[in-house]
Amino acid sequence: MTNEQAAAQQGLPQKQHQKTSMKRLLKRIFFIFTGAIMMAIGIEMFLVPNLIMDGGIVGISIILSNLTSLKLGLFLFLLNIPFFFLGYKQIGKTFALSTVFGIAVLSVASTFLHPVEAVTNDVLLAAVFGGIALGAGVGMVIRYGGSLDGTEVLAILINKKLPFSVGEIVMFFNVFIFTWGGFVFGWDRAMYSVLAYFIAFKTIDVVIQGLDESKSAWIISDQYQEIGEAIIARLGRGVTYLNGEGAYTGENKKVIFCIINRLEEAKLKSIVEDMDEGAFLAVADIAEVRGGRFKKKDIH
Image (cartoon, rainbow, N blue to C red; front, side, top):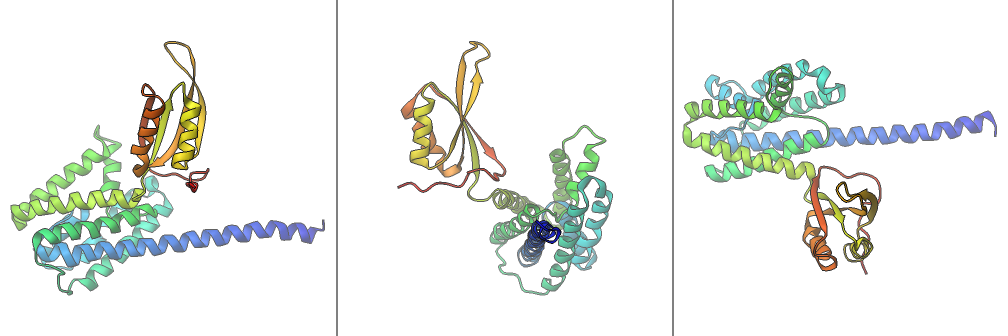
């Protein structure tokens, strides 16, 4: 092989890596941009016209915008940016840049959408659909490596100095924000805001994890081979046999491990019960599955 041929072979994987990296970057930019637009739609076309708040920096921005008559987009940008500069070392360069981009898009989109007429004046509908739009946008941005609210970053920084979890700190901030909003907008609006926040929170989970949520299953049974073959035949899922040992009895046991989606959980339980009513079965949620042979096989 000549030096030119060796160099060409080395250059090919490098070019493929560059193309893959560029595709990932463009994909990230597209989804962060789309997520920020969706969040702006949820805020400006559903929540703000009906005096409904969100939690975190967005909620503070909505209140301040109402009290000062300044643009909401201005507060969204100014209040968020300092937190990400403070947490730059903890959250990393890529996350910080993705977040600044997302916040900039959110702020600009919010400013342009502000004069647009509200989709609905029904407060309940605004809370529900505004929460869905907002949650879908935030979830999309988080899934692709960014964030649109500096509250969590601030909570992470505080968490390092105080004996409270990040979730507890965020909850404390939001209780304060919704209470403040109750004095500004009225307590009925504060309660609708809590509803919108809850819907957005649940929607974020769905977007991040996907509708086809994955679960891991661990099964211990003397009929492990029959159960494993039934899972392959009836669910189309691959299984892995692991070696285990009972701590109390010292007996060697085979442990079946497999990945399913939430719609297949009931069928898996039925398979295990049919084969061995006394089998040990544990099922847990999984945030993400990559690689391996997780893709479902066709069942004929």
